[in-house]
Length: 304
Length: 163
Figure 1 (cartoon, rainbow over the protein chains, first blue to last red):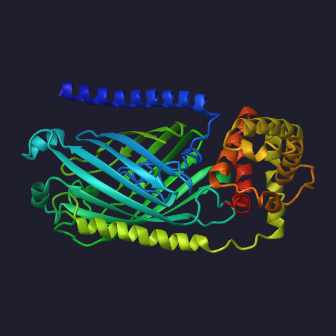
Figure 2 (figure 1 turned 180 degrees about the horizontal axis):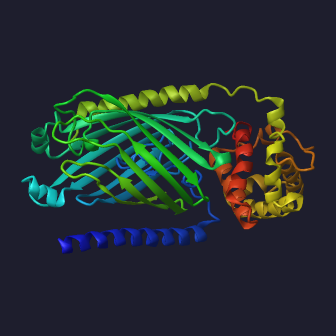
Figure 3 (figure 1 turned 90 degrees about the horizontal axis):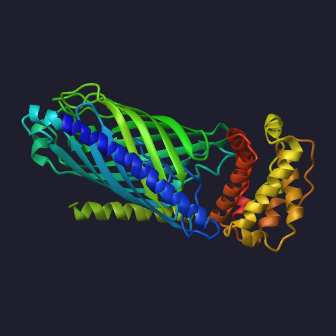
């Protein structure tokens, strides 16, 4: 157990260090290359968001209407990310990548590994039993410009899908989930209120996912799509720093365990366009037999 | 791994929406109002921001640094290399001074006419904003004050970005 904890601490330190290393490399690159015209990455810092928990561009928990990567309408941008969520009784490792095409379409892929640690043993699944979920996402910007349209209330509006496939079909059926795969549909509106240095996002997601799909899709209590609200507020402290909070409403489809809405408070740092580091304190509530799953969310994103 | 049919449906949907959205973009921009095209309007609420910029002397220094950045930036240099840069700086000082409710008058050309034939794209526009942000940082303009000015400049994007 102790060794296990140490391993996770080391993992976190490694994540932060690698972020610092990449950012210092990127900064050196920027200093050297400031005179040459980069073909990519011409959006303004932090206006592309970071990689949210399912791999789409957004905050930590919820997708935003922004198209990921720093490409403008003539350009292609791409990002890759790793995220670690360290909870009292579980931990999550994930990695993914996205491509933003011409500030119009975003295609993303992410893999989540949800490790049940001791809970897995308690439930008879085995210690460290892990749910693995693959997510492919597509987002399309329909209208508006979150950054430039400062003389109107019109937000940037996008729609998206996230198709998810969980690898533990038998366990999911046992807990009452109706499927091991599902598709979320969402519409997001994002607006930067530049005079207030405030970015606001609202998302409505139609989903059947239990614990975002880690516990499958649909259940004994409910097996239909329900709209769930998600919101983010970010205050820009400087070009490189933002702080904010998020909320994500979730359905409650399974009889065996209640599911809580999620919250987080985050700080995001983008020393350059090539890297961002996000640290959050996340409250994920009850997950199966364990209440009060609150912990650190750390994510590093690199891109061009 | 994923059902092929679903994958195809998702991509088809995305492409459909992309085309719809692009068609929407192809609709010509409505004529900008004369007032907006000339420059951004005076905003009395921004007088405190004018002071945070160091008044008119602050704007003069800011514009010197801004032009240095623009000329050092390969993305923006082509638009300024063969221009009367001293004149542009004076016009920008007046324009920013008016927006921030300073004691100035903008007598320069309207922004639509100035930018009409330059073929500026979003990337070059964003590069210019970055260069301005760096100049404002160098002149210790508080970040919130910077954003209040940028919020007034941003609505000019339809007449500046023509490509």
